Length: 117
Image (cartoon, rainbow, N blue to C red; front, side, top):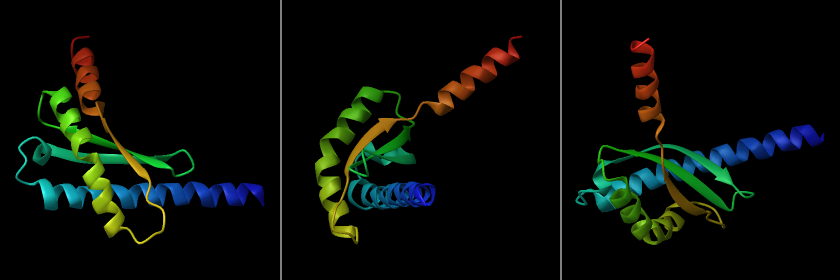
């Protein structure tokens, strides 16, 4: 029985993270499409942490100035979360944190290394 409950909770975290990712992507599109830095951001994943207390949102940006992108996302996090609370249909809204996803760069580097063998 304990294993079944753990599985249900795991799925709940994935569902919440996915819902948050979708809604935040919509918020960024709807409210920040004229922002040169944020308009180039794509959300590529989300993971719920801390008993669903917060969701880490992974993003990719074509902008090479990662620090500027991260700072801009950090600046708008509070207003994005406020809008998220208005759009989510639940009592508790998790905190959100943006984190750059460097998977594409790592894959390109691996391809480069393999091609040089």
